Amino acid sequence: MSEPGVVARADTPVKTAAGLLVEHGVTALPVVDSEDHVLGEVTELDLVRDRFPRDPRYSSDAEGRADLPPGVVGELMSPRITGIDPETDVTDLVKVLLEERIRSVPVVEDGRLIGMVTGRDLVRTLARNDDLLAREISYRLSFLGGQGRWTVRVHEGTAVITDEFDSAEDRHVARVLAESVPGVLRARCAVAGSE
Image (cartoon, rainbow, N blue to C red):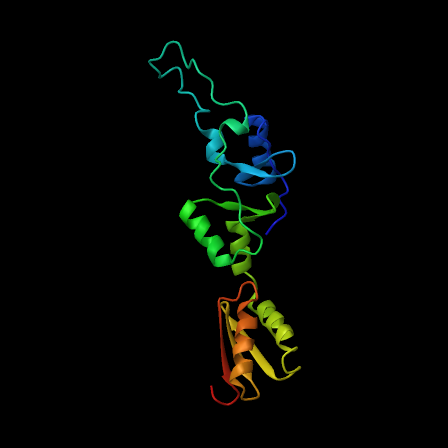
């Protein structure tokens, strides 16, 4: 999760919101009220809708457009996403992103915005270095049987953990600990000498 950083209010002018997206390199802004309660979200596509008139040189409409597009974010935001809980499992988060075909989701606690999770945050997690993942798993496992009990190798996000002892229960705990490390796709445990 990232800090929410930049937000829009319902009365934020569309041009200002577009500038915020460009300046901060994001594709959507959460829209919040004065107490940071999430009202909805405004995306790049929401902002560009009806903003580009036809080239008058090629238009048969001599009068041009009579109506103006909405002027403030509150008139065009998408209210469908109200946010996810900070304890939401990443699998459920990915499901929301994919099913809703969105790039970011506000993280909300007690109705207030506390952060954002984007597809880029998830990709950054997947891209974590295998050596770094192995060190983090080893550190966590050092509390389960001490230093030297476990040997950890990680390749393409898959961890192979070798246990110097023969405890199925400890290996189960080791696998669960390893798979809780962000960026580890799966973990497998074996007893030393059985591989």
